[in-house]
Image (cartoon, rainbow, N blue to C red):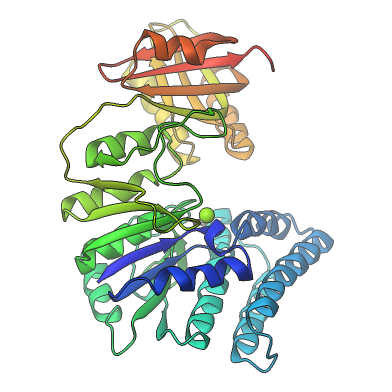
Length: 421
Ligand code: ASP
Ligand code: MG
């Protein structure tokens, strides 16, 4: 038994869904198929959630209408027969979503977010399971929320490994089907309310399920040939990393290689499960293998995080940045779920680099200002080079000014401003 994960880009259209069938058919094994929301659906749902909590009726209707139209177009492309049961099923999901959006928002934004965001994966998995069966592939739909249980940390649930392992082993059993189609990104709490695992969390779902079922391998199907040593958006001569140790993969993911979600590797490493990252456009190409491998060539990798914010925090009374102040600062960042990408402490100031999540940054800066002097700069880039040398540093510094630098033995991190911007 193996686990496959298909991300949004691999299921963004009727044609893309057909391509998935052609991939699945190449493999003789039983497959747990973990699927994300189609295309940019999760982003669309995030906008719908904003309209929902701000009570913007017209925009809410518009967003809902567009989402429905998009999915209906895919259905139309997959099922020419309008009598197909898929239409009823998907119609029901949209009705349920409409009912949900007609409710009043609660005071808990993260709770509301999770109750709405999950519709993307509900829709994608239902469409795909219908299509697989219509194409003659025996598939069953499995609601992941009945098996993966978390605490109440909405928008980034922590998995209860014991309870979930038992449920996963009970609910992900193949009874004559060859494919179990299930949702990435989602789980539920004790009260069966949906709890999501954090944006881009479907890779993590695949790893969790593989760990719990002791799968032979996990394959993440992407629109890139595998894990590259840099994002082709920023570099034109990227190198495919054919083999990576778990540690290399964890480090690259941690610093922001967007190909693998950072939480994905650990559950696989613990059970020694191989991870393949392969192209759904070119499924015969080898892609990247992540596993219990010895170092081979140490290829320098470049990770770019764009649109970064540098927040500078200093005490009003010129007291040192000591543990008591740090406790307040970390407490505020944690409370608002703003993750630190890089931090630097000096005697009288503390600097953190975070993603430009405007809502969270505003809340954090406001809260910090109650205790400290705070200033911030936007529009920065955070560049991490793994296995760096002078040449690689020079290469990324072309046309940039340096604001902050941190050097380790293997990695260097540079906070820069692009002089062109
Ligand atoms: N659909 C979710 C997202 O876009 C989860 C995922 O794609 O992994 O964040
Ligand atoms: Mg996605």
